[in-house]
Length: 194
Length: 138
Picture 1 (tube, rainbow over the protein chains, first blue to last red):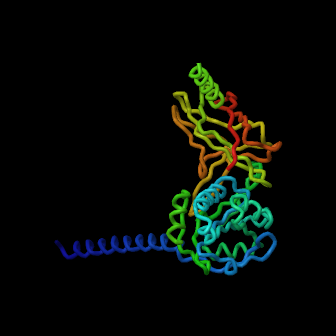
Picture 2 (picture 1 turned 120 degrees about the horizontal axis):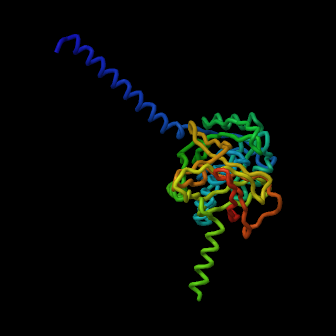
Picture 3 (picture 1 turned 60 degrees about the vertical axis):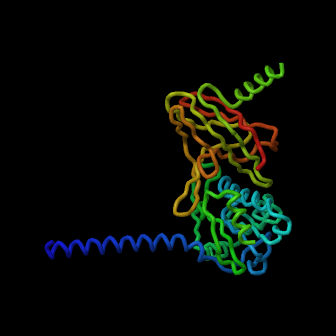
């Protein structure tokens, strides 16, 4: 083989190896990122200040959405509730379920608290000012986008991060379940952490 | 005699959810949560014909508004948008399910209970047909 050709071959192989390493790095980052987010935060529960560190439990499930979300949010909270109801009374005392509404324009703290409690009276529905909500959303490297639709009866919908986080006592994500998620998977994860 | 009654009963039940163009299995509309005015409806819509059908929404008899919607995933986020029509392939099926295509209902015109049905009128390729979706609690 001519030296010129060999050089091209080596350069080509190096290029392919670099691409593979970049791809692997991105995949690892995508897998690890949800596990490296979170922290202590302050929100509004039913009109009162609510600080995560004052209300933390052994296992803390955390989901963000909005009250007028008729599809994915209630399904997620229903699945969590099915899993929660399969726990013993003693086990339930070790589990918090926290829902944060990002719809600061339409969801009052009272509405979010009432909505969330309909899944289970112990579930906590949080709201807050735009600043508070955005701070929490940033903390979890999450996001939301309000999408206006004048032709729709409601007039808007909110695209939001769809992750069910399991938080430690400091509010850091220990684990996460992506969509689709079944109640059995949630239960298994809770049982594994108890 | 009992067998005959059961056959008639199942036939009548099927008629409530089907016609010669579509059949809807596991049809359900959730009663809105207390204090909320919106909810969703699901079911498996089967196209009984050997050609593609286009299904549009016309009205229902229990809510002020009804729309066809789809939930979609994008960059780790879930979004939802109103769409004009559902297309169902020949002899195919459209699964209206959480996180996918579904029916959206706004503002019940009266208090709803789980022994009732929502009569939904669809426009299928220009012809209107009404299908009953039972109401249920989540």
